[in-house]
Length: 77
Image (tube, rainbow, N blue to C red; front, top):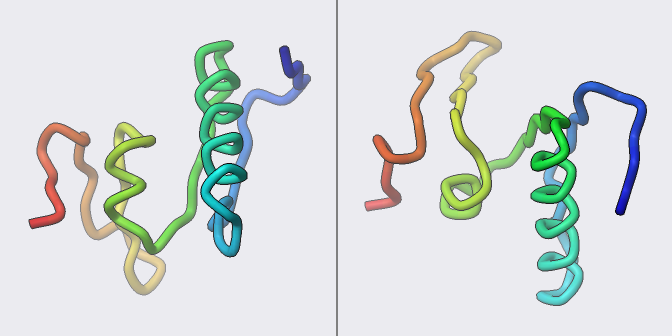
């Protein structure tokens, strides 16, 4: 078990450049941390992956909040 003393973690493109196994390990770690009460803020340009790991989702454009949605309201189509 990973233990942090922080209340939130901010990650920017956490899996960019990683291989499939490394990406899976990073996402598993993030899920474990979230289950243990850590708020994780993920910055990413990859909507398909964000839809599988985040809820709610905030879309920020030009330094302004453009949209706030929950995963069930969005799709990649």
